[in-house]
Amino acid sequence: MIAIVDYEAGNIGSIKNMLHKLGAAAEITGDPERIRLASKIILPGVGSFDYGVTRLRESGVIDVLNERKLAGTPVLGICLGAQLMCHRSEEGKLPGLSWINGEVVRFPQMVGNTRYSVPHIGWDDVMPVKPSRLFGDMPGLARFYFVHSYYISCATAEDILAKNTYGVPFDAAFEKENIAGVQFHPEKSHKFGSILLKNFVDKF
Image 1: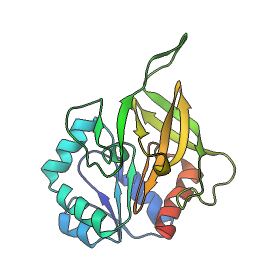
Image 2: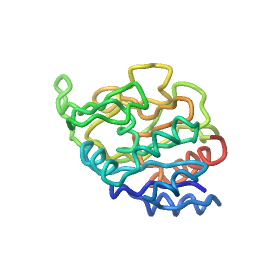
Image 3: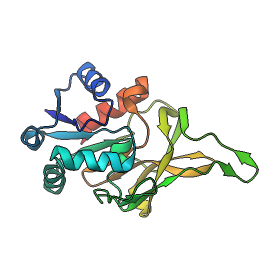
Image 4: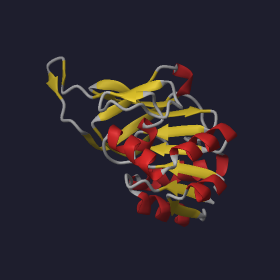
């Protein structure tokens, strides 16, 4: 069973629906004991960094997430969920989970003489930088749906799976041991998102 962590900060219904279409057993839960029993975990997320950290604390799932991560259970973070795996964010003051050596940075609105709208919203190309389980079997250029004002910046190059550029280059996906994170929303990304989630189900 795949546990989709419910801490009142994510598009959890659409993730579950896509997993069910792939034939994967998935459950939306905020119960630490159900999360502890899961074969894989998805940490979704929409909203601000400090809100996400606070909701994780209040829901009582941080300890079990850390426990399962250390035990080797595969965990996929989506958007804010991936950001929460970093040390810190410019968006808030609270520390993240510190599972990945990186921080979360706000997009600049001006780069040189060019103005960029923030947040970065819409479909955009993702450029894998190395072979990976998560991006296997992608047909040609992978495109995913983004909605974010802040981006992940990994400090360890070996952890980076894919990059993108919106005024400045940023890390669109990372993987380290049994954890992975994506800045985009696979549950909103049609066939590309379906392939990525299937890879997480089958290859992690």
